[in-house]
Length: 124
View 1 (cartoon, rainbow, N blue to C red):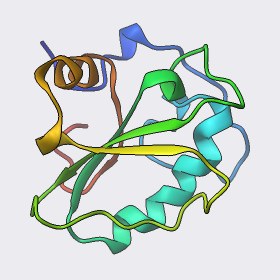
View 2 (spheres, rainbow, N blue to C red):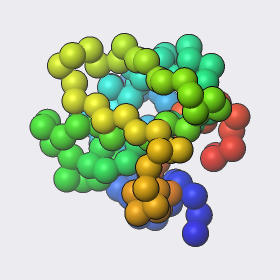
View 3 (spheres, rainbow, N blue to C red):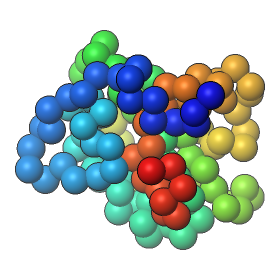
């Protein structure tokens, strides 16, 4: 099984605007593209972030204005938490760490997740 970016399982969306410019943006629902764009700064500034994967409704056609953004973070040091400023308090974001999730969810993310940040270029 290919890990992440199974593009044949996903819709390809139009980009919401010209400011959207992150890895695999066209596979993130337009309602979540600006929020993921905001996260790019937080990912770059936190040297502990190896990769960020969007999964769940944020990469599916069923996404709506009430949907949260599901992020799975791969870290170098599993003892360090990820602190972010993207979205503020008005955005629902669910951040999970790849090293702390169960096998069922790990398989789902590996199969259906879309990498939106890849510090080392391992998942391109």
